[in-house]
Image (cartoon, rainbow, N blue to C red; front, side, top):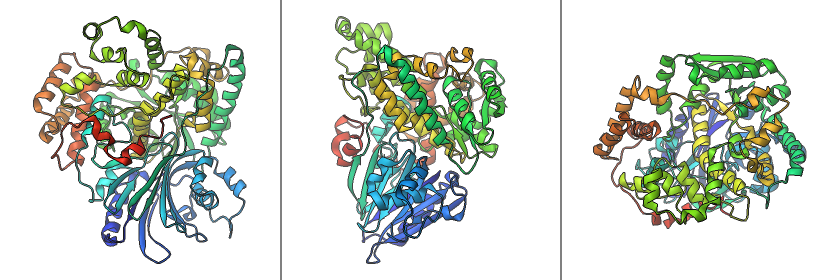
Length: 635
C-alpha cells in the first residue's frame, strides 16, 4: 500500500518547478507510506523530459529495498508506481515465466511491470486486487494510469494547458502549489445532497477522480483517452429455487478463495471484527487459512447501547484469534473526533468510525487489516433493496396521488422518491440523499450530478440493479473513499475480500440480492458462526454523534459552522437556521454534521472562494473529460 503522484508535461514546462511541486505532493502523503519514498524524472528516447513519478511506500510485499518505487524495467525502459495489492501476482508470474535477466524482487509491483511488457495495458484484465498505478511506456512515449474495477484505491488528477498532475489524494494535488484552490459548485452541491461527493467530482474545481474500472492515457501533458475496461456483469434472471444449493456451494468456494488471496502478505494480517455478520464471516474464514494465529480487533464502548464487542468476542474465542478489545471511554472517543475530521482528504458526513478503529489497530503495530465491507451491497442487506423494490412494483399507483399530498404526508425526500415518472436510479438517489431537490434549492444549490452511474436497465432483476447502484454509488463515493482515507491516515492498509471482482460478478450473475436480507449469506455461513449471531439484527459500529453534538462536541460543532460562515460558502442565516432546527430536534444530526465537517475542510484547504455559486446541470456535460469519466458504469 502506498501513495503515488506524478506529472505529465509538455516540453514548454519548467521541469525544476514541476519537480519541486512533485516533492511537495509526495511529502504530504507521508502517512500513506512511512517506510520509504522515491521519485524519478523520466525522459524519452531523445533524452527529453516527459514526466515525473513519485511514491510513498508502506511495505507489505517484499520488505527489502528491491521493492523500492518508482520501479524500472531496465530491459524495456518502462517505469511504474503502484498503490495497492495484486493478490494473484504469483499466479501471473507463473504464467509469464522468468523475464530476461530473471525476477529482481518478490513484489507485486514488478509483476505488473512485467505483465505490462507482455500484454500492454490489457494486463489490467488479468489483475485481481485493489490498485491505482501509473506506468511509463518508453517505446510509445506515454503514461498510463489505471484504477481497480470497484474503485477501492483512489487516483485523482488535474488538467491544465500542457500539464496533468495526479495523486492518491486531493490534498496532495493541492500541496503542489500549481492548482487554484477554488470550490467546484457541482461537487459542493453533490456533497450537500448526499453527505459525500459523487465520483468523479471533488470539491476542488478542475480535480477529478478516475472512476473504478477506467484507464487514462497521457502524453506530453494532454489526456489522449479515458476508457473503461470493466463493468459489472449481471444475469438475465436470478437463480431459481432449485439451484440455490448449487449457488451456495459455488459462492462459498469463491468467497474462500477471495479470503485466502487477501491474506497474501509479508507482514501479519489482522481483521476488523465488529461482531456483525459480514466481518465475522471474513474473520472466520481468515482464521482458518491464516498461517499464524489471526489477530482480531474490536472497538468497544463503555455504554452497552453502542457496544457489539461481546458478539465479536464469541467469534474470536471460537476461532482462537489473538483478540484485542479496545474499550474507549466517551472522553477518549471525543478526543479523536477533531483529528479524524482534520484527516479527511475530502469532507464526508461519515467515516469517523473507520478512523477510530484504524487508529486502534495501527497503534498495535498492524499494517494490514481485513474488512467486511461489501456484504450488504452484494447480498441485499440495506433497506434500499426492499424499499425500492416495493416502490417500483407499485409505481402505477403513485400517479393517483398529487405530489403536494405526498410531501405533506411523507416529507420532501420521501415524496421525491415516490414521483411516478422517476426511474430506478432517480429513486435510489432520492433515497440516499440527505436533502431533496427542493430543499437543495432552498439552500442555494442548483447543480445536480448523479450519485451512482450504473443501473444496467429494466431487462435485469430489480434487486440486481439495486446492487449495482449501491456498488457504484454509496460504496464507491462514500464507503470506499472514507475507508481508504481514514485507514491510510493511520498508515493502515484495509483489504476488502467481498469486493473481489470475480466474487462480485458471481453474486450479480446469480442474482443473490434477490433473496433479500442477506438470506443466502446466512446460508453460506451456517457452519461458520453461532446460530444466534446469524439471526442477530444488523447494528454496525455507530458513534453516538447526535448526543455528543448536543454536549461535549458542541464547541467543535460551533467552530465548524463559524468557519463555514466566515468562508461565505453559505450565508450565516442558512447555518443559523440549520443549527436552530437541530437544537429543536427537527433536523437529523448528520444533516448538520456535514456542514461542520465542510467548514473545517474549507478552512484548511480552500483559499480562493471567488465564483462559488450554483451552476446548472448543463455545465456537467461541457467537458469531454467529464463525459468520459461518467461513462464507465453505463450499459
